[in-house]
Length: 318
Image (tube, rainbow, N blue to C red; front, side, top):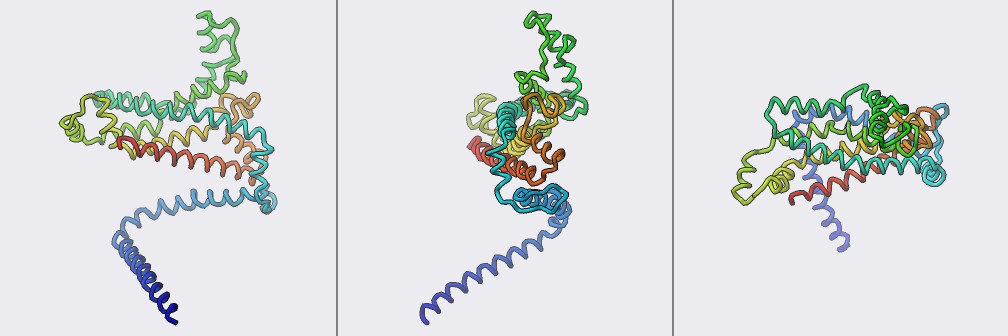
């Protein structure tokens, strides 16, 4: 009896603490009810069109589903098929990592460097240069320009220039030769990479507190590089994290460039990526369970990469 009474006395304070926490949470929500009301439309839309589809895709990935019959649970068969029997997926995974490892860091660094340089210009010139650098990322018919540049005949700009310089004697089939396809895709992606992250960095630099720079000069900051590392970068951590997420997502989710330039499928799958593999099974073969497994693996890769990148960026200037 005594032991039981001691346990009851130990449980009661815990329950009381939980009630107090719930009561405090309820009061906090009620106090800020206007803010929650303003956030509600976005949160509802986000939950319906983002969270629920992700959860549904995760569930469907454990089923066989061809959109004509009800989903049939098959356990881990889609994932075992993906990594053990699907050689094309492994090629797509290798191409995606190769593409992302080059374009992700390079485009991220380029976005910040160009934003930093343009931020030093006078306001009117800065506005014009921002538009010039941002325009390629929103151009609708940009792929047609690159198809002309890398045309496989002697009239293509790249071939014409190289022949005139005497570097090559015969035209190169840039978009049909598997040796050059990925290189061309990387070049085009880097040219188009100054997008949302670039604008976020411009905004972060514009909102930088100038008094911090003045205080840094008093405390011993001697040059622009020290100013950049100890003041600018720590002050821009939110923009740096946002830019990292955007660049990682864009580099791992590449598909449009590959389809527009290299075709679908590309020669010997030289430009095949995880997303084009997903498109193959999801929109052509309608194997939705298998396509959901591909999407889940890609989501896990993006999530893991973003978490690692965020941990590294939080150490900047620390």
